[in-house]
Image (cartoon, rainbow, N blue to C red):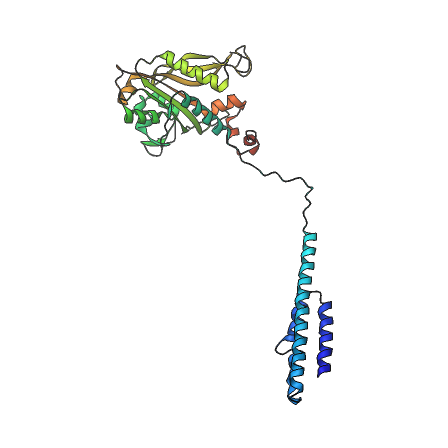
Length: 343
């Protein structure tokens, strides 16, 4: 029986040493050390031994089991290290390769221009006020001196939800709402940026676009205050050499009204293709707040005056960045937006 244990130990240790996989080691462990393994089978014959031989054979069997178990443990460690080294070799990273630059988002050009416009007017002491995009007919038209069936409404043909609910055509309703809340408070200086909607769609018009409108109400306000404000805006937005001119126009909510031009920043007023050889570029509409609008807003037109202006963010951005088609802002082409990435 001693010879059997010695022979079993020799064969087991040799098999364990030659094992190539963890699965083989598990199989050897079951075959040699399991409840139905070979060592157990040998020990079942101990009943035929004398009382003196049994403890000697039992000790020998335990020694064989420990050696086999230790050999299996050592081989597992060896195979795991070998497997790790092989994996590291197969999955190694070439650190000499250049890194992959992560894609970083950027603000949309319209967002950049709108924020720049807001900062300019905040620096002049204006407040930023926003309002609903779904508006009532009263605030969108009637409170701005545009009663029902007024022909000027055709210029702002819009999207109606019901007879008296529509998508706002300008951010002027915010001015009307603010006057109603703050009257007769003076001075009142606000800008109202936001999205507006009209049924237009071509290279220079979009069904949805953005406006920044301004309103000032105070005592002794004149057209000179309006021109000075817009001149300061033009210089900060387009450069210190800018000049502005006001041309007579008509808006129902202002009187007198004017279209406002800036001197062409491309030719410096000498005439070029950008300004159609005139030396001037139209950027916005403005005027003195109509007495009817002041009165409907809760102000006494005999006591206070005001001026208002409105400009399209897209129009300013197109001029500032040299973009000829307004649809470039909305077609989802990342090449347009990525030109404005910072950092």
